[in-house]
Length: 206
Image 1 (tube, rainbow, N blue to C red):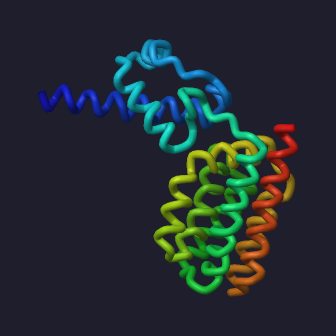
Image 2 (tube, rainbow, N blue to C red):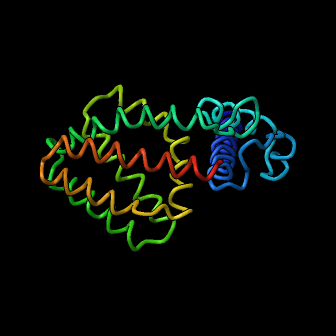
């Protein structure tokens, strides 16, 4: 009985990861209806782990009414408005509290952003923002940021995949302000950086 339950959990975890990856990399386009039978056949599992996976993806905001979320202009604006508030504050905190080790990791993220492959750049971009966010030392803000990660990833993939101009230069400027312990400048640069991301995404969907 325990063995059967273990297999069920494994099937669910694998199904969740594969469906999530298909959404995030665009294989399942925004607005696509998720049909349990079809996904079960494609992933060679029963419908139960597919159903559980869809439920979790709905909790993360990637699926709405069994369709891949289709992000509207309002969704974009609301998400980035919130990001500017919490990540701007985190950048100010980072200027005071980041350790030498964390600063080195931040610099490495910038370097990978300039010369890495797409997957490496995506991961470095994610880590850049996570390092800064953790510096807030505010568990509620960090939890909110974590719960937004899947939707943030959709935006991040858009700006990286379409090579938004000056993206890494802006990361470099934020990093330099943090290293100089200039919290006000770091906060302002982070907000301007996220505003540029927003405007780029809006341009692509119009």
